[in-house]
Length: 259
Image (cartoon, rainbow, N blue to C red; front, side, top):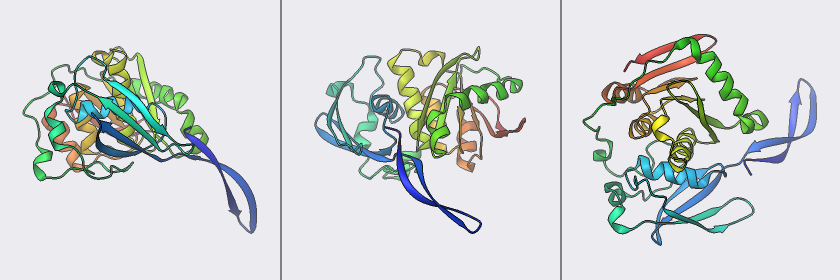
C-alpha cells in the first residue's frame, strides 16, 4: 500500500468540486535488532526489508553478504509496522554502538545523529570510477519516469534508480523520503547480489550529504539529481571521489564534482 484515496475539495476559479485524490502513504516502521529497539523510520510501505538492509549497510551496522533474519512482528491496516532483525553479535558493525535514539523522519538527513563526530568523513575515495555520458541522461530519466508508478498516481513520492556502467537498468524504488528510496535501491541490490554492478544513480529530488555517504558505502561513483545539491553534499562528493550532477532537466545539467 503505497497510495491511498482521500476526499478533498478542489477549487478552480469560482468553482469548488468534491474529489477523491490518491495520496502517497507515510507511516512508521519500527526496526528492532536482536530484540532491542533500534530506530523508527517514517517511510512509504513497500520493500521494507530492502529499506532495512540498505540502512544497516549505510550505517555500518551490518555489511555481511549473508542475509540477516528479518521478521514482521506486527503490521496494522494503516501500515504501522514493526520488524525484528536478528544479527549475530560478532557481526554487528561499529555503527551499532552509535544507534539512533531519535525518530528518523522522511525528509531528514541527520535525524538520530547524536554527536558531531558522527559526521566524520572516511579517509578514502572510490576507485571504481566510470565517466557518465551526459548524452545518456535523457534516456535514463525516461526509464526512471516510466517506472515511477506511485509518483504517477500521487505526485508525492521520490525515486532513486540505479544503472550499471553499461547503462543497464538495475533497480528503482519509490518512497516519500529521498534517502529511503536510496536505501531501498541499495538494499535490493544487496539482497540480489548485484550491488557490485551499481555505477550510476539518479534521484528525483535534491541531494543532501547523507545520499552521498550512502552512495559512497555502496561504491556508486556517480549521482545525478533532478534538483539542487546542498553545499555539504558537494563537499562530501569531492572528498569521496564521486561525480555529482544537479539540476539535470530539459537537456541541462550542472556538474559540481567530477570523479
